[in-house]
Length: 445
Image (cartoon, rainbow, N blue to C red; front, side, top):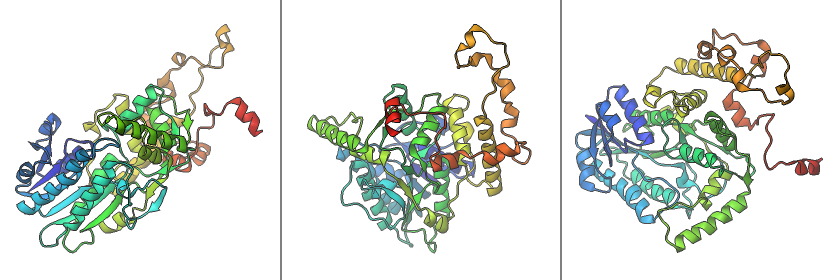
């Protein structure tokens, strides 16, 4: 029997495909475009649209498990587009599974299906669907999720829905590229006071959660007919994390800000203008949904997923950030960063400690080269070209095992992992906000 991944050419879909191929599954992909990198993996690709019932039914032939990740994401656009792909397309997948005798269906949903625009701090799966939505994407996904869960039948089709939150990593074509582009244009502003915490999940961990849920999806398991929040389970400060990504890309941190009320009302105004002129093909720079996402807390209780199907990460946060940095710098390609989904927990922990050691080394101050005084030394800024980076950091030592790492006792006691620093909202001590000018500092004094 084969495994079908709808949307297998997308960000999450291809991560699921790689992990399935790694463990020896026969994989088929349904997508709208040709994907040469899938051909290299030996994956069968059926080119088509989930809105076509006949195409979906054909893709489900002789398939045991379907991972339905295909969807249209975004915060703007006509309702018909979101509803036809996300909702009606999912209905076609359900019908295809029932008609072709598929045993399992794992649906990729979103935490936004229960997001009403207010803070969500540690909420679990009992959180109800809101009475109104701020954009069409979560509304269409909520309708699809309900159909998937209602279709669960122990004798015909086993179903479950996963709600991965803020999927990130190398190869992302939406979140990180758009953020970096706005930062390069100096149009990226912090919304709100900057203390909001969010959940996120590295793309390989999100993919692994899908495989873990499918493996546990049996007639007697508690997984069937259930929805699950999926994340690392350790929220971080959103704007600190954004600044960390900007640092990896060699860009300055976010220094300008706008209040939540200004962003929300501005989003409402832009939505009205765009709807009036029917600008559905162009996304406003701000919307009410986006303002709420950027300024509010949204993190979730993932204990249900850990309990019911043993959800666990295969890539540590530190390792994921290191991979993202190497990808953004052009050092590695996406395929070179793939990890199997069944890594030994001991190996995962060793890799996590390796990356923490790497980060400690990375954050050490760069020694100033010993040179005599000159006329140019009147400035406090050192010439980076005069520093021999090879002498400062030895690449061979960055990835050594934690058991072999030699770290000064005082540094080891005072060092804080990147994950803990972002979770606690610890800012760089020597950085100042652009909005925090001398006049404001005098006023506070």
